[in-house]
Length: 226
Image (cartoon, rainbow, N blue to C red; front, side, top):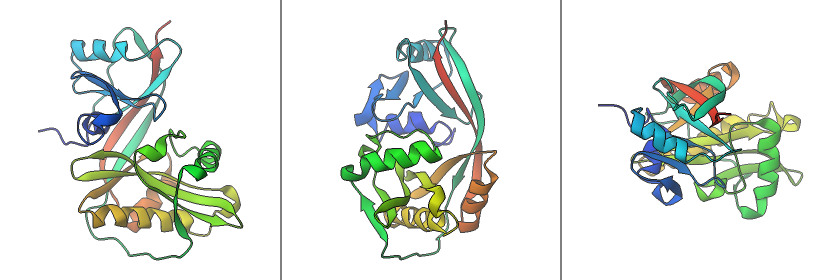
């Protein structure tokens, strides 16, 4: 049986994130204002046609899955990347730091600015609707953040981990990654994450705090052909 995280976008939209989904039984996507991810349950022709119908002219969606990515003739990949999926199944180091605070919609513009600068992955002003985000502010500025994104039965994704260049080297990414992962574990769920395979600094950090490689992943940014 295929692992639930092999197609994390689909398994999220078919279960715990159904409320954020557009589409039906063959293909689904997050509402465009939230995040641009889309997926199919399988790569049969009917499902791929259903996916094509979810992508409007002029917009792009992101596919992420362990299986090689197949596209209908109506869609074309404008970029692809190799990624890794990592999970933390054993207890992690406990962390406590009074600087860590929950971020709210009042922080959304500053969160978007930080994500746009550091590019940890797709992020929008509506990302807070998917899960809690936490951050550290220094001198009134958002120095680093991390939060939760996709959710499946028994799993929650650690996502959006980033630090402002002015504050790197202080261990804030490590602190917030552990903080959020421990919150996920405290709910009885397994934290997992995605990183570009080429980002050895990030994967090395995650390995150092207790995450292990679960699967290679394929990423594609796609749009309508022509």
